[in-house]
Image 1 (cartoon, rainbow, N blue to C red):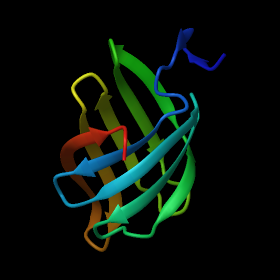
Image 2: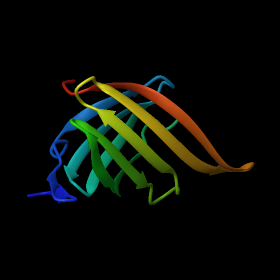
Image 3: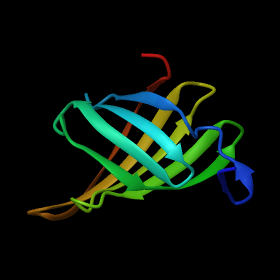
Image 4: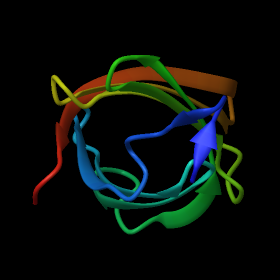
Length: 113
């Protein structure tokens, strides 16, 4: 049984589409409580994909905080995914010529696509 902090993580085994207001669409597949694969389907990162080690916690019923540091680019991503209301909120940080930058994004969760 995959668990984090002794709780079953209900997102395990799900493959979802995260559709952000910024125009980024990402297919995320949560393989275990500590591993996910993602692929950018649109937006500036279109075509990018990776498998990442994740850190996750259920912060409310059916609401999960899921965070990771992308291995290849050092981009940090933190998502709050509310499966009950089909919403996602993201905070992302990355290196640029101007130093470390960040942005906030939000969007919808599509479980059947």
